[in-house]
Image (cartoon, rainbow, N blue to C red; front, side, top):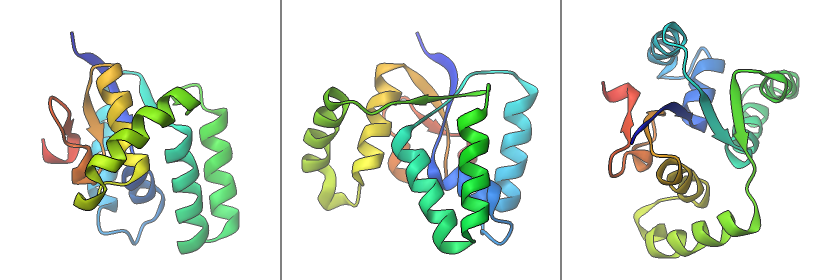
Length: 139
């Protein structure tokens, strides 16, 4: 059975946080829809790291720190820790799909989507649209 949870990827976090991002307006609209139907939000420690690093590089350190602190303190998002087992499974998938441009972080996210039967993905990254998972940006 499919989960009602929404997986949130780096591309969505960055678009929400950076007003000059090409997907900023769409991200705000999607996030508003998500908040109207309370559902669990899920991400991973590596997506958090990737998001903080991207904000640090493209915006500034203060924004990156504030964003990361907000996520770490949030009662509304579950941050899945990447342990050795998850990393090993993702590494196997990465080796098979790296040539297609799929990142290791994407592979970890794909496994979390499959393991938890998550079908709703808040992302602008096409690599996360697999199997039964659909990007909210496409709906």
